[in-house]
Amino acid sequence: MSRCKYYLYCVSLVQMCIVMIVCLAAVGCAPSDDADPDINLQWEITPNPPSAGMAQLDFTLRDSTEQLIKGAEVKLEGNMSHPGMQPVLTTAEEIAPGKYSANIKFTMGGDWFILVKSTLADGREVRKQIEIAGVRSEK
Amino acid sequence: MSSQNSFPGTDLLQLPIIGKFLRWQHSRMAMQSVMLVIAVAMILHGLLGPQLAPRNLSTLFTWVHYRGLLVLLLLVVGNVFCMACPFMLPRELARRFSAPVRSWPRWLRNKWLSIGLFVLVLFAYEYFDLWGSPWWTAWIIISYFAAALLVDTFFKKASFCKYVCPIGQFNFISSTVSPFEVQVANPDTCLDCTTKDCIKGIRHPDNHDEIVQRGCELALFQPRKTGNMDCTFCLDCVHACPHDNVAISTKVPGSELWEKTRRSGIGRFTNRPDISVLALVFTFGALLNAFGMVSPVYAFQRWLAGILNTTSELPVLSTLFFLMLVVEPVILLGSAAYATSKWTKTGEKLLPVIMRYSYALVPFGFGLWVAHYSFHFLTGLWTFIPVIQSMLTSWGIPILGDPLWRLSGMPPGLVYPLEIGFLGLGLLGSLLAIYRISFREYKARPWQAFIPWAILCLILCGAAVWLLNQPMEMRGTFLGG
Image (cartoon, rainbow over the protein chains, first blue to last red):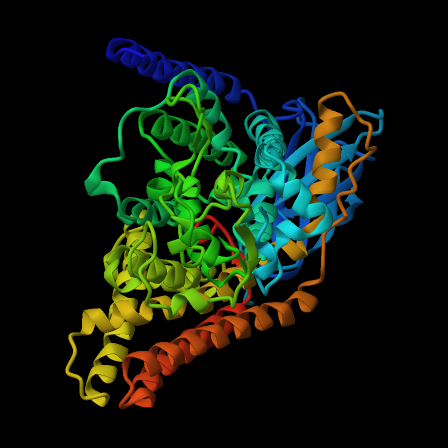
C-alpha cells in the first residue's frame, strides 16, 4: 500500500470512528426514566438522614388535578446504586385516603433508589422512582 | 515431532477436550467472538436500556461479573481474559485490509503510559461513580474498542496490549501468581531449532510478505521467556512452533517474582523501574479501591474537605489518591528499605532495595483484589438472570419469562471467610517471595532483610482485614446525600 493510500485509510478510519461516536451519542440520549408525569409522588423518610436498618417511608400520590389517589395497591423495590446487590421488596399500606406508608430495610449504607409500582383503582399501573442518596452505615 | 512428554507438570494442551480446543487454529477467535457478542449486548443495553445500574447489563457485567470472573480465573488458571479479549477483533479485521507499518515509539516502550491510564481508570471509577452509570460504562467499552483499533492500526505488533492497555497490565501483573504459564515443553528441542518460528512467525513459502502464522507479537521468545509478564495467552507461539514444543503448563504461583533471570521482551525485573511501580500501584491501588467502598472513606473525605476548605470532590479525591498511591508507599517502603539497608549493613541506596522487594508485594495485592471483587461477584452471582430476562422482554422476546428480581448470590456472611482466605493466601505468597529475595540477596544477614518487609506486609494485611470488616457504604456523593 502506498504512503498516500495509507494516510487516506487512516483518515477514513478516524472519520468512521467519529461518525460512530456521534451516531451512538445521538441514539444514546434516548433513555429517560420520567414515567407517568401526570402522577405526582411526594415522600418523606424517617429517620432523616436514613441509616442502615429499618426506615419508614411515607408518601402521597396525587393526580394532575392535585387530588389524592385513593385505594392504590403499592409495591416497593429498594435497590442500591451499585449493581449486584439483592433488592429489598415490600408493600405499602394506605394509612389515610391517598396516604401510604411502608417499612423498608436498608441492608447496607450507600446510595439507594426505590422503585414504586402502584396499581390504581382503575387498573392503571404507575411507576415512580425515589432517590435516597447517602444512607449511613452507622446510626 | 511431539516432544511434550518430557515435561513433568500438567499441560493444558494435553487434556482431552480443552487441549484439542486450544490447539484448534481458531480457538482464540471463537472465544473472542463470544465475548464480542456479550460486549455488544452490554453496549446496546448501556446506551438504550434502563439507566439503573442494577438493572443494566453494562454495569452489572462490567463491575460485578467481569471483574469477579477475571480475578478468579487469574487465580485458578491464568490470563484467559486477555486470551479471549474482544477488543482485538476489530483490529484483526482492520489488519486484513492494511498492515501497520510504524513501530511503537521507542520512548514509549515501557509501562509508564499504561500505569498512568491504570491510575486514571481507578480515579474515574471513584470520581464519576462509574459503577452506577450504564451510559458511561457503555462508553468506556466503546472507547476501549476504539483505542485498541486506532493504536494497532497505526502501530505494528501488539502495541496496545503491551504498552497501553490498563486492563492488560492488571492481568499481566496478576498472572505472575497464576498457576499456569505458556512455556517451552522441552528446552533441549529449542537448542536445535533454527527457524525460531515462535517469535518470527511462519511466512508463506512462495510469498515471503504473507504471514501464515504470527509469532509472538509481544516480543517474548519462548526459550528465554520467564513467567507470565506480558503474555496474553494468545497461543500464537503454540500454533507457530513446528516442533509442537510449547505447553500451557503448571508452575509455582509467584515464583517468577523472585527470579532474577533476564526475561525475553522484558529484561530483568530489577532493571525495570516501570514494572516495579506497576507492582506498587497494583498493590496500593487494591487498598485504595477497597477503601473507596467502605464507610470510613466518607468521614475521611469530609475531614479532608474541611482541611482543604472545599466542597468539590475533585481536590479531595485527588488528595486521597496522592496520599494512598504516593505518600503512603513512600513512607512504608522507604522505612522498610532503610531498615533493610541498616540491619544488613550493606549501606545500599533505598531505591534499588524498594525495586527489588516491590514485586514481593504483588501476591498480597492480588489477594486483596480477589477478596474485593469476589465479594461482589459471589454475592451478586445470579443477578444477571433477571436483568437478561428484563432485557429480552423489553426487546420483545420474552422467552425467559418474568424477571426474578429476588435472585442474588451467596450471603455476605458466607463470602467473608473466603475473602479472609484469599487475603491469607496473598500474605503467605508475599512472605514467601520476601523470604526468597532476602536469602538470595543478603546471604550474610537474610533475616535482617526479611523482617522489615515481613512487618510491612503484616501492616498492609492488617489494614486490608480492617477494611473488609468495615460496613460497606457505596455512594457517589462524598459529602452525603
